[in-house]
Length: 231
Image (cartoon, rainbow, N blue to C red; front, side):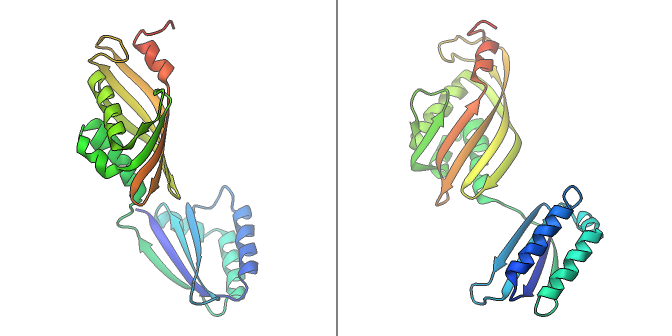
């Protein structure tokens, strides 16, 4: 279970505190178990700060706290704070990145389940899709429905999400696609062959909708598996 520690403190020396944290990061490279850290400043107070530090688990957090570098960093931090920092320890019970959930609806609901109505809930009206397999960009929800229908008519397929990262307005998904060639696809009659390819999709989200997309995948490998070109 993901563990989060919130550190609440007052300091009039934030620049010096940043130097302490930078030294700590350099000294603990390869040893620390922190996976994510956010430092926030109170808009209503120039001296009030809150740090949010994430760990894979409480046990990993305890390992990190027992590092001698962590103890040194804490002592230096206390010396720069106006009073003792306050700690809140939290077990994460729900963790959702809404843009990631939106991207996954494309793979699960629209592509694999074939729920074409979902496109209107996922893609902005002026959505633009950049796909190496299309001569022109697909536009809007209807453009994505058209593209998905082509693939679903040609294959029974599944996506497996191998890795995913969300940053700012972007969601990047590394996936593996497996399909059985059941219908005509790009002029090739159904072969019944089982095919596999890997790829990466990047979606840019805005106002709770996907605004733009980029697809990169092993199109040449798929063509070879279908016998569309010499190996």
